Image 1 (tube, rainbow, N blue to C red):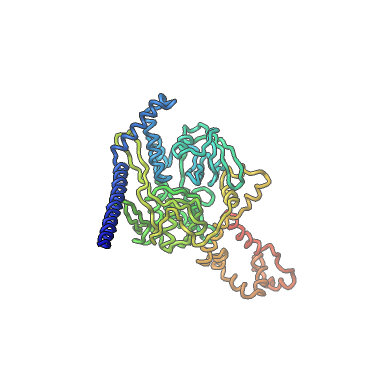
Image 2: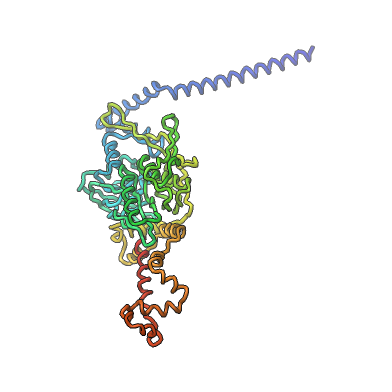
Length: 501
């Protein structure tokens, strides 16, 4: 009997414990469900927003100077800014700036900027702009604009401060990591016309070197990039181009469709270029080469560095995965997300720049946060990058003291040198190959050095051709002067040394 009562008490206690546990779990689930309901209830959160808006207008010390438009625009900038560094709310002025960028005309100083490690950082100066000519470099941090701290400035604010009427001036303080020094520059804003396709001399002449290797540098991907690249390639083909160096270093990116069209110029029909994948079905797309105006057999090397971003990474990743080109340089920036521009109806030209998808290379490698790893890693130190930039920039030598100018002028671009080595070695394009074909007798001279010595005198002086006895003169006269034939060959060898630099 006692055992039965004890068993009942234990049973009742266990049931009670289970009921209490169930009640606790139910209360927790209800609480979380209620919290989730509140978190996802637009009306409750809009009420919160309106209450805060009105409290700021009523109680903030300078609230009388704020308009509802100011507060709402600020809230939208904060909301979009918390998503990722590339999404943003664009009021009409900012949206107009973006359209000017892609069309290649706007008033400003000419720098691509981004927030990197919390600092407003120059990704690349645009060619032929006030910033480029003043020697502003990739990697420079903008620490002050017009004397005001730019440490926590947003991208839209920075763009608004740097843009302006052509002819007006803006003062900036830059911190250069390679020298650990601040540099102050005053730039005169200009109407920026961006030429995105350049040759090795920062011009648009496009000539091959002595090995028939062409060189094209893309500074960004604008609306005319693919068209201008086609023009450059045709100029090089008229000179019997045998290989190509495509330089994407310091290229911050641009338009997706232009990146696709650039890839198409080097791929056979149907080869994959890039895939975009997002939450919505319409964001998922696979881009393949059309095969029009393609050069699928042209030997290529692509140069990249850590400032090659976005569209540059699409091109590098595509050509690498298709085994279409060797990539030389350093791992790229790793900006592989798709921003779609969404105009807001009824808002007088405002728009959203919203990240809607990510890029994937043909082998389905994600670009964002990872970048493209080169086939041949050739690193440049910060000092090397500075020397390369100063060497190329019209205002570069103005940025260095006199005792460093010789160092800048003699700098050798090791990444470009590696690219040339790969192309020349692959196709066995030797600097002397063409002269040997034009003068077959030179081959015999290499095989028989004595014959080369005996024949060198008649080649130097053609007058003895009327006197057969002149053939005996090599025994009586001293050997040919070493500055005859070898001197000409040295001149040929000197040409490429100037050309790549």
